[in-house]
Amino acid sequence: MGSLSFEKDFEPAAVTPRGLAPPGLIPNGDFGELKRLKLSSTSTTPRKNLNLSVTEPGKNDGPSLDCTLMKYVDTLTQRINYHIGYPVNICYEHYANLAPLLQFHLNNCGDPFLQNTVDFHSKDFEVAVLNWFADLWEIEKDQYWGYVTNGGTEGNLHGILVGRELLPTGILYASKDSHYSVSKAAMMYRMDFEMINSSINGEMDYSDLKAKLLQNKGKPAIINVTIGTTFKGAVDNLDVILQTLEDCGYTHDQFYIHCDAALNGLIIPFINKMISFKKPIGSVTISGHKFLGCPMPCGIQITRKSYINNLSRRVEYIASVDATISGSRNGLAPIFLWYSLSAKGQIGLQKDAKRCLDNANYLKDRLQQAGISVMLNELSIIVVLERPRDHEFVRRWQLSCVRDMAHVIVMPGIIRETLDSFIIDLLQQRKKWYQDGRISPPCVANDIGAQNCTCSYHKIDFIIP
Image (cartoon, rainbow, N blue to C red; front, side, top):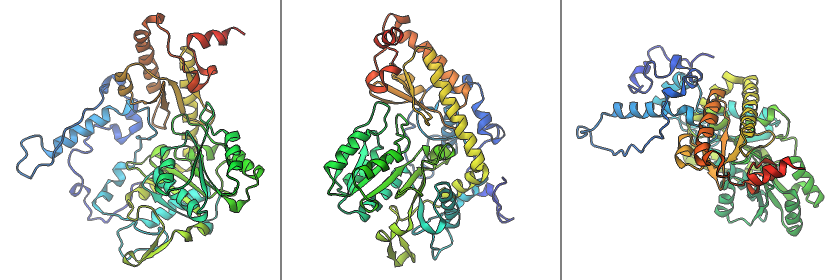
């Protein structure tokens, strides 16, 4: 797909800061090629705080603005190959084509489906993106409402708010492994909140959900269903939850379901039809900067059009109605999302999903063969392993850690060469940490299950029937 077209007299150089994309820094403008550079040519040292300050023009005795930015870009570029612990796709190739848009302030204030009185917005791109996701999640264009958010948290806040407005006395239910924004929503909206236990793999404990639904039978249920938990990548089974509601006697007008599919919302639809508005769900949200990739945090929130009237308010100042959380919204994000979706298409995204799932299994198998405690959930690209003992190692690979666990999230930009380098580094460091086997690795059975733990006790237990 080519770059966007602009008027002939437009000169990108006039608005592009010098030094931000120097020739040769990114080979052929291809992040894929950049990822394949030898890791020895990149920095293993975590970036340090630049300790910047704002100085008045002409009074800066330090490096120039361009020099500071160039150094920053160079540092980030060197650290790309070591970004494996967080769900962000940092490898995309549309930044150069879309850079000219940075000269404009684009604000998608108000309802995406209503035009503003100013021209500097991208609502036409936004609606195109929303229509694409409506089709993916099986809801007709005239039956849904949605908008491009500033990230997954805003999507959760909005989805839960819609549920609260429909069912004002409803109780919010979410598993212990749900994203922290769910409990934040309960606090902000002063909702009654029931925390549901999770199984060892991070999936919702449906027996505990059933017990608490029956206990609170007199009040409606607002349920957050996590389609890929933050740390373990577990998927709450939407169909089991719907059946549980039915078994407990809840009719469709007595419950609301919000699906938090921040990461997996662009993976699971290419494997099965779990996420579908043909089922009695109320809303779905994903993060646009995660699996798809975008230089700024953003997300997509879609709900049923018939539900949104409870939130919509006419705002004369902007000549629109507004049912969003944030009001003013980044108008650049929808264009980046539109461009990526158009360039990749469903076939390209399906290939990305399959490659990530295959690479996650590859990493899990390699770690397992090396005798390292590791767990990988079905339909997940998050590989959970025993926590490295060295903080410097954790920082070098930018890992996320909880209790005795760490995880690697195998995003589209992570290639097998990167995983191999991580494995080699980990095995070398483990020899030091555990003194070539004289010290035993910790037991992580309580975190990832006895069947996935290779501590001295469980390894013996696994070998001897």
